[in-house]
Structure formats: structure tokens, C-alpha cells
Image (cartoon, rainbow, N blue to C red):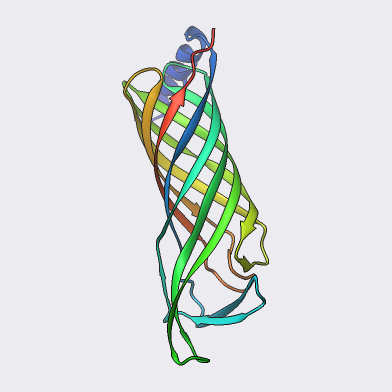
Length: 204
């Protein structure tokens, strides 16, 4: 086992030394399919931007809403197979919720919208035209239509992509937040599935 690990480390170092380190900027954009997790408490509440008090329970249904993301990145190619890719994205997320409104005595459907400025540090592994992504992000709330106690979300992403050529590619990712998005006492957190395209610029 030790010999195997040593061989892997040596191979990585060899590739890092032999490969020419390059930096290439790019843009990315696509569609988000986001929702809030159900949580594990019986009930919760939040206020919308009009100050209305809305109470929800675990019997209420959170479902996916569709929106978009757009961003920029810089790929620092450190070896043939590995690159470090910082990203800055504007990401519109949130969830749909269906809950029982006691005031009007019927079920109500509502969109909970929240937009983030997201800073990611993506580890990117490339094999032929395929690439795989993993890394942490920190997301800052820039706009929402409900009141939240948390203005920052910490998330982790996992994804994969395919490059048609050295400039154009497609990718899909899943991002999971760990900070409650509605209220400090709840466990409702962000889940985002994203599909999109990337364009990497040639830099001489």
C-alpha cells in the first residue's frame, strides 16, 4: 500500500514538473434547478419582504424552481490532469413551497427566491475530453424575497463536464449548502442542480 501511494505521489509530481503551467480565463452560464431540503423539525416560520408571517411544517412540500447562473473563471493548469479553477458566479436559487394558509383556509403555492454572489475554488481533473469537479464555495446573499437570518452559505460542489474543443464545453454540477437558509433554528438548506456551457479564451 505504501509503495502504491508513493508511486501515485511521484506520478503527480512528475506531471506537475514536466507540464507547462498555464492560465486561461473563461465564462460560464446555464440553468439552475434548486430547492430547499425538508429539514428535521416539525414546524418553522419565516417572514416575507412585506412583513407577513408564514408558518410551515414538515408536511409542507418544498419543490424545485428553475432559474439561471452566470459567471467567470480562471483555469490554472498545474499538470496534465489537474487544474485549480477559481470562479465567481451570480446564481439565482430558491425553492417553491406549498403550504396551508390558515387565514384563507386553503393550500397556497409560493416561490422563495434568493440570489447569491458565489466564490468557488474548484479542483478540476481532466481525462481526455472529460473533466470532473470538486470543491468548496462561499455564497453571499445579494437579493431575496423573504427575510433570512443567514446572509452567507457554505457549500460543496461535485460535477463533471465534457470539452468539445479547447474553447467550448458543457458541464453539470450539484451543489449542497450546509447553512440553514430560512431561519437559524431550521435545517432547510440549499440544493442546486446546474447544467450549462463554458467558453475558455485563448491567452498568448
